[in-house]
Structures are given as structure tokens and as C-alpha cells.
Image (cartoon, rainbow, N blue to C red):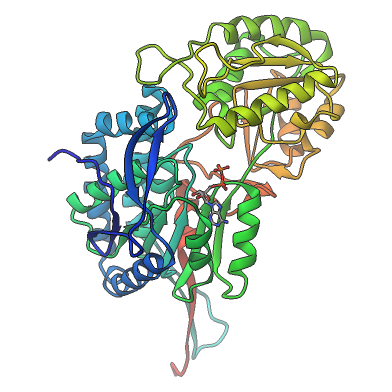
Length: 481
Ligand code: ADP
């Protein structure tokens, strides 16, 4: 079977018209053409989907883990089977180069594989009792109905990273994908249906904005867990809204990743890591290097090698072969990135390369480096979400650590050094949830992804990921004399 373009919501195993009948357009950011119109769901659809997920929870949570694992594995295989169609769709709705879309499909699918395996490893405990007539047992049970809100920069992987552990644990889930990228989410629902995942277990509600459905997700008493990936500002709104019903929460929020290059670094490797950390997805990932901190005595050498590579990045429509950087998601993003660059230059930063809208126009931005950046500039504090590398100078290790930690965020950090003592010192001193040491690409299904400080709560992936969807139940068995 092939996948066909789906444009309705997927609720309780049925392709469903929106309750208020509205549709919204999905735009290709490479040329601003309309790809399709998609059902615009609202609060009534959210309530219907939550009720369907609650009904499905009754049997899904009791379905043996072995069988839940089989459904997930079938879904995984179908995604791999359709990886090229999915990648093509993803590039058309979010702009990333086809090779990156393909990697994302494989990466996203791997969560279904991994958690299909983890489903069978959900284990309890028996605790030694001090009393002869009592036994203490610990059981793990599915949390219940979950709701997920996901961003546009990883249209498939962010859904898979939440839904795979949820379904493996025995939870059911309702997903609201980002307004820019509902088509990949609906294609996933199509494949979930083909995999035989029962009605109501996985539901998708596209919507032209997040607020209305977000409010239902975070306040409805049947929703026991909310998982969100997106901006810190929206995460804070959801946290406040979810307080009244004391929901379990996972939040993967914004970052301001430092990328530190010490004078003992292998510069070629640091440049290679800098390119992959910064320019992947045109700089639109939450773990993208946001601030390059380079030690004084290698500053010029690093910039010379880095700028040579950055200038050679091929920009264009991600569907064309050989393109390394696609468009930004929309014109608002271009305006924001350009404003950050202008502000830095007005306050004394050096323009090393790029620094303007690309000659292709539209949503394309030139790969950019600016040097001599300091704290007075907005770019030092804001998540850039674009192909711009601001470079700061530092003199010693202590200053680098202080600069790196001088932010309310704590998602990812990177540093390059060849000294083992420094590697331990710096990795322990950085207040971040994930650290790349002599490595620019850190995401993997097998390791815990998540942040500290205002970058989030909870972890996704690895064997940690499923814990977010399991409640601990203590059983005290008495009267055993
Ligand atoms: P980004 O800047 O990456 O778009 P957002 O946090 O605005 O980050 O969006 C991430 C997700 O959050 C999207 O699915 C979006 O629709 C949703 N969203 C935006 N505003 C709200 C809100 N007030 N309540 C719930 N979800 C929201």
C-alpha cells in the first residue's frame, strides 16, 4: 500500500471533518505555494479525541506488552518502507534538504523500534519487608490518556519520540502537530492505521494555531499527561494551565547552546562539528549551537577555517539534489534572524560572511558568521533559529564556563578540547542536560534527550523515555501470618 495525502483529522480510527468545518493552508516554505488545505480542529474535536483515547485506554493498557510491541514494530517497518515518500512530504512542508528529511524519518522510526523493545522490559520491584506478615511490591502502570503538542522543525521525529514510549507503556495519545507541518503527522496516522493500531490509541488533530487545543489538553481532567516540545514561552503557559489538574508533564523547550572551542582543540574537527551543529536544518533546531565561544589565541584561525566552509554551503529548494540548506520556515523567521544580525552589527559586531537575505529571495537566508559578539547584543540571549553563527572571544577556561552558563536555558552545550582533565572539569561545570564533547551531533534514540533550567522537564529516548509514561504503584500486602 502507498500513503495518500491525508487532510482530515484522525480521531478514534476515523478520518474526520473538523467540527466547525474550517480548513487551513499548508505552505511550502521554498516557494510559498499551497501544498494542501487541512482540517482546522478546535476545542470540540479535542474533547472528542480525548474521550476516544480514554475509551481506548481501557483495552490498550490491558493489551499484553508483547502485543503492543508488535503493533509498534509494524508501524516502524511501514515508516521505513515509505521513507522516501515521507521525506519528500517533509521537505515540502518544512523546507529541510531531502537528505536531512530522510535521516529524520529513519531517526524518528527508530523510536518506534526502540520502544517496541522497551515495552517488554517494564519491570516492578519487590522490597525486603521488615515485618514477617507484610510484603512490599512496586508495580508500573500506564499513566493514562496523554496529549502531545509538537513543533514543525522535526515533523515526524518529535511525534515518534513521544508516541512510541506512550504506546509502549500502555497509554493512548492525542497529538496536535505544528500548524506548519500537519501533513507528515497525518501520514504517520495513515501508517498507524495500516499497522493495525486500534482505533482511539493514536489520534491526530491538525489546527491552524495551538492555543485553543492546548487549553483543552492542559485542563481536561481525562488527560493525565502532557508532553510538549516548543518554545519556553508556550511551555510556561501550558505548565500554568496544567497546574489545576496537576498533570504529569514533559517539556522540551528552548535552548541557547554554547559551542566552546578551547586552544587545545583539534580545529578541523571543531569546524566540522560547528557546521553540523549549527547549519543542520538551516539552524532551526533547539540544540543548534547558538553562541560560539572561541579562545583568544585560536580565534582568527578558527574563524578562517569555519568561514571557508560556511561560504560553501549550497542554499536552495531542499528537493533539489546537493542542497545543504533549505529555506527558513516562513518570512517572519527571516525577519527575526535578520533583525538579530542587524542589531549585533549596529552594536559593533564584525560581519564575516553572509548577513543578509539570500539572493534567491523568499525565505532563504545566507549562511552567516558574525565576530566579536558581546553580551550587549540581543543575539547573545535569544534563540536564533537561523543559519547565523555569533562568535565571542574568551581568555581562559573559567571565563568560558561563566559565559556558557550565563543564560536561563540549559538544553545542549558543546566543547572541543583534547585535555582529559579539562574534559571532566568542563563537562561537570556546564549547567546543561546534554553535552557534546568533541562532537557536534548528539541526538540518538538510545540516550536521554532533555534539558535543565528553563529548557525543560523530563527526558525523551533511551531507557529513560518510557518512565515518563509510567506511574509507580506501591502495593503493601499484609496479614501474611
Ligand atoms: P515555535 O516557535 O517553534 O513555533 P511554539 O512554542 O510557538 O514554537 O510552537 C510549538 C507548538 O506549540 C506548535 O504545535 C504550536 O501550534 C503550539 N502552540 C503555540 N502556542 C500555543 C499555546 N498557547 N498553547 C498550546 N500550544 C501552542
